[in-house]
Image 1 (cartoon, one colour):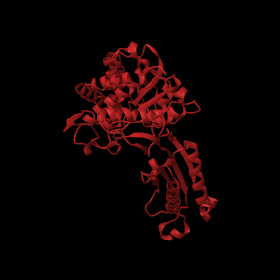
Image 2: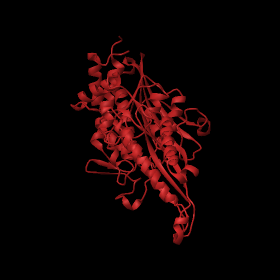
Image 3: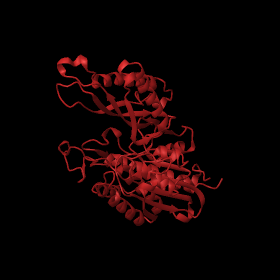
Image 4: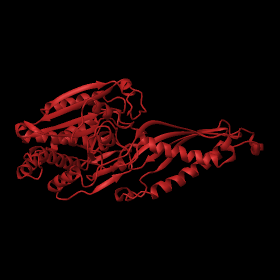
Length: 431
């Protein structure tokens, strides 16, 4: 395994970091943001990224995976958007000697723009304002994808591939926002390695622990009656209130049980939320059916199905404690994307080497942190057997929001760190 502390590796890392071109980063980010790639329609952006991979001198493959075939995979992570294809691209920089295989992986899909009236610009006509790039996907995660492309381009431009040991792979995958089918397709196509970095928006902090989430639909029965004789009926809405209280109590217990400092620092690492409620047919009729849809956190160390079992147990216990629901229990469905958790030990060589590269490139050492949301990290770790962390530009608090943006200087800084990490790892002496 190459040694990234070798003096030659340090020199190579400095050269690669210096080779990142801020003007090229700006141009690429604006170009990618101008391609609307809402989940389910990533093909045109995949083609643009593949073209840029080829121009950078990478051995490029662009292909379409079959979502129907992938849906039969026992580890299929679920999806929420109907689709006929999964468009992927991979660019490879191969060294002249045996060595590690390192991955930079980013997703090409973005969430819908939402209410256009809430934006101060057209979300798919990006603009630069005060050093920030605005547009749908700027933060989540085209800024990170461009940083990864700039990093591998800088390594290719500043170092002789014959002097490299191993290979660097840039992956562009679809469908992260609705479950991660694109990443699973890449894994099944053989794109795994010795280490991976996903440049999701982390404010240039290193994410070593990632929580997860599942989505659920809760159907609560009642008994209809005229409003003037409401005691003759059973309000499904009131029974939902009972179940909601049970879910809030469960949320408190699950979060209080967490001991990992990275997750405790978040305050509420495993939130439960009911985000949509539908029910009732007439203002003066006791509602006999209410449907609630929500999100349930997957705790660190858990897979999605274990969290689903916990959720089922909470609902079952609440129903058992109520005379009406005991005889007419609510039904629970878990559907859509299933995001398990994932983690890499803080002492693992990957986050340590990445922190070393960041300290040299930026003059400060980033902290190791946890995040309360799901990402493709868990698929590379669990299904791909690839140690993975997240490290990228942008703040997740502006992701999915109107006027989404990323600091251009932060994208450049991320690219320099990733370039330094790749160069150091691929030029170390053989140990």
